[in-house]
Length: 107
Image (tube, rainbow, N blue to C red):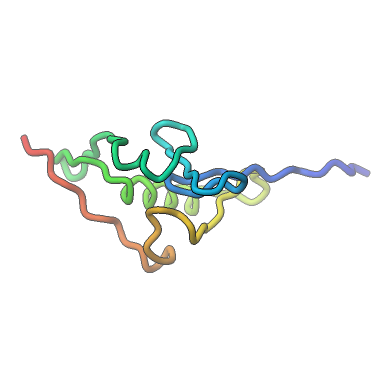
């Protein structure tokens, strides 16, 4: 009989608070935990949607990553996401939070 346990590994989403470091949040762009003030100066990339370019927002990054994980998660995957109420960019439940508006880059 196999007695080995599978350890669940938390997959942090953009803006999720660290479990063991108060007032520290995960920045997916920088791949690090940082204080809240970090996000004021952290510039994300460009999103192409319907042939137009937009500045990506922190809210957009969080929502799209969260949707991807919820859509692609498979049972038995050792990674897990937490619907963290303390996320800096969470404004509702999965069904309540629509895609945030993007700022047009222009041509």
